[in-house]
Image 1 (cartoon, rainbow, N blue to C red):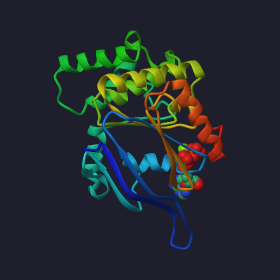
Image 2: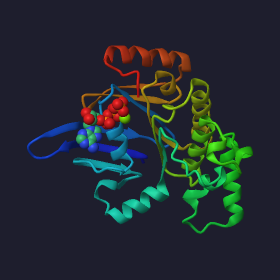
Image 3: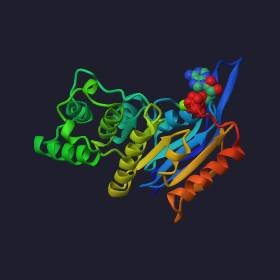
Amino acid sequence: MMMLETKEIKKSYGNRLNRTEVLKGIDLDIEKGEFVSIMGASGSGKTTLLNVLSSIDRVSSGHIFIEGEDITTMKDKRLADFRKNDLGFIFQQYNLLDTLTVKENILLPLSIRDMKKSEVERQFEIVATELGIFDLSDKYPNEISGGQQQRTSAARAFIHQPKIIFADEPTGALDSKSASSLLMKLKQINTNSHSTIMMVTHDATAASYSSRVVFLKDGIVYSTLRKGERSQEDFFKEIMNTQSVLGGVSVES
Ligand SMILES: Nc1ncnc2c1ncn2[C@@H]1O[C@H](COP(=O)(O)OP(=O)(O)OP(=O)(O)O)[C@@H](O)[C@H]1O
Ligand SMILES: [Mg+2]
């Protein structure tokens, strides 16, 4: 079964007299364990797509299935539960709570569930170690670097072992060293725990860490590249080529 499947999703903004169709019929099939990047020019609908896939926003028409379950027809309450239990999020701005420690921030998604304390500790140790922030557990967000904050936010996204992690420009606010450190960790978790990741990025280097790149243009899927057996460097070159053909790809976020 597909992890994520979309059928002809469309999204428009505006009112009856003045409507803009941002997504014009998107069909995607994402398998469990895939690490997918979404690229395209500024305004091409990347964030809009991620927001409807992750149920932050509703589609105008079409369907989105996550493990076969249609989230476009779910009632709000059920959808809120689904989002909390089955999805993980990493945003460009780290969205950490300043008054909580690194560890408390990471454990937030677990607080609503009844899990044994020893199990919580075990899960925390695994994820924090994987992301290289275990030693920072008792620090507050303003005591650690931007890269460490974003790895904390990634740990928080992974802690409850969601079905899919959604990331919108997760490296957008990071310097290149912190960015590659985060991407290496995401890739590692993706490989080791077979988690499914969908990441919006305008950066070809960031995209080269994923296993597939989906290019959006004018609200449709313009093309798809799969890494396959090639090296990350060759994949990077291919992504750059496609970007230059596509044109108008923004350099700012
Ligand atoms: N809430 C909204 N109301 C009206 N129009 C919107 C809304 N959100 C986005 N849009 C429009 O939809 C289009 C796509 O926006 P979106 O944010 O998805 O682009 P993007 O590909 O993420 O761009 P960027 O690379 O700049 O982040 C843009 O023209 C934008 O102005
Ligand atoms: Mg965007």
